[in-house]
Image (cartoon, rainbow, N blue to C red; front, side, top):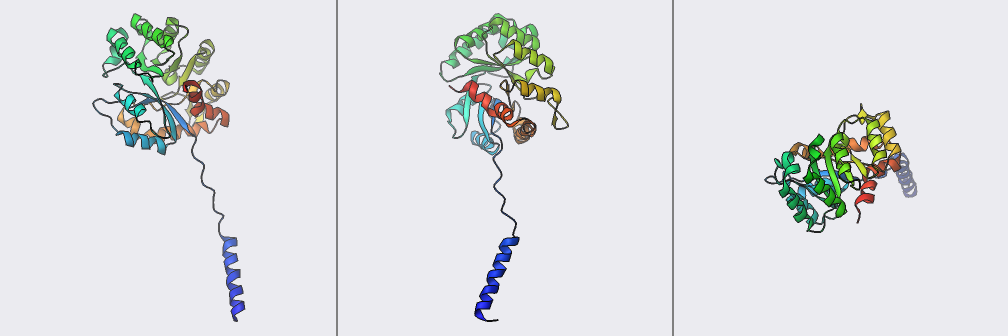
Length: 280
């Protein structure tokens, strides 16, 4: 074969390779950003993950913001004061020094002193997460906490059953409440009634029972999300070490059912509602 013919054959072979090679796939899009509206970075006596490991976990999961609380408040301060690049930290005052305070804070005047002292740092956006059950919410110290939040334009993050939730709003109808776990198992129709009755109520969905069945959104919850797309938030609730270990699967589970909603609804629940509520 002459030189020109060999060159021509090589060119044809190269073109054939290009023609038959698989088309390079475009890079997969980044996963839907998530604002984690129920995040504990507890320091009792020291955090399970060091700060840099936690921040790296958020980056890996495309968690772009967190509602940060801790017991005591050292962990929240560490997250906020680190000013991490690419992570928006919304700090809440937790009314607990140690775990035992969960059972007694509602009758403990020293907790109000803790809240008011911590508030003076000047950067807190809310109070909570705190725990209340039934008429345990009907104390003068809980009312004082609610009134303080209203006075200072703070949100409340309440782990409360139905009765306690209603008492909180009865203390002060101007309260703005993020309802942790959305009552765990409160019926969807009752959740809808609360959303109608209390315009300043937002429902956070960690540990919320019944949203999916077999990985698919139930008809009741799909209808609820589409009817009230601006009233829901997501959360991890890293209250124990195992919740940190399963953080990635928690975010994956959220994205799985969010993908079953219209894109605009999914984005509101995933991160846009938090931006609208907490940006200052």
